[in-house]
Length: 455
Image (cartoon, rainbow, N blue to C red; front, side, top):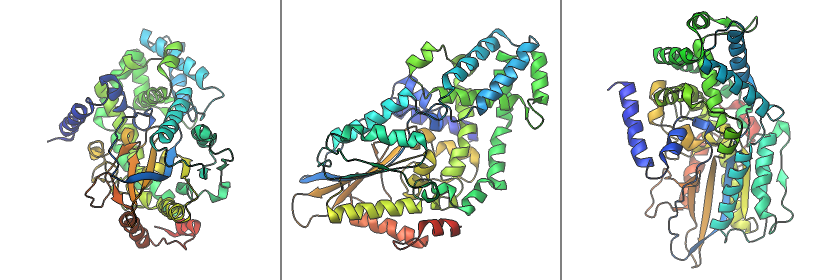
């Protein structure tokens, strides 16, 4: 079976299952929006074992939906469209698109990288659900909160802890110094990982999708909606935007698709109020394919890629070690109700793979195959989070249990259990400690030194 047929067959099965959960519209959007997907919550309660109650939470979360992080795709779209406009080479749809790009620029101006109202709302709801679903955890003792130095991560933390302040008036968000972000921005401290991202192997895999015949053909179809034939001929040969920058048809269309994804960070009311709607420019098949092209970078650089034991996964080890240590300390000292961490997709995704969470731990031999085993919208949507919920029994000499949730969905761990989603903490801890030991990371290790040396 060819990749295209196989991919559509698998997507059909996914749709059939998820239509039971999501509306057709929200599901279609999720499958074409990758890591830009706005957070989706599905209630999934499983009865707690008799005699047990939650008492502690260990957490890591991504910031909420945001404005464009930078103007790159706006600039490409605006420059090419205005060039065509000067020579009267835009179709009516092209003229409409140029107006939309202008409004997108106005919407993002002075807000690049900040949380949108939708992002703020989603984070607030995640926080409220944690407080409501686990009331026995929040006893008013202490909550330790840590954020990366990114302003949007810090704001996410501030929004998240707001509902807790009534019971925790002294709650404080700790931000490590820029040169000590090894827990939440470990991806900036590993020379081996930096080399991996720039390697010929990764670049070639990405180029294979960007330059695929399907990409070229679909780009031509989209371009014909926007430009006259004469301008498309110019764009096929490359349009110079500067001395160092030349844009071709596929580059332009991918930039438009990137903006389509970015618009999903805004509420429907904001989009309607600003008359922003790219739906006429792409068919559903085109949206699915361009998502495959664009999201491949996430899969290769911060996902399972070609090796689930690769450097792009190993670098999350210091964060895993910290979660193990903070959990043990909370269990022993009995004075911390939760550890909350706020960072980025580049933090959450490698950790999910290192933990071997279902849906996050399958590598591929060929990049074309990745959509069948890994979906960014399920692993790292905006507001993505991994929560470890700990339970203790009211009876003596009973084991502590742990439930792990990915985006508030109960997930399987790589260990046996007779009572999913509950696992015995001692077994889980030992499994991951053994894994870290094989990577050369122990309780006594210096994380920065380890990241500098790991290969």
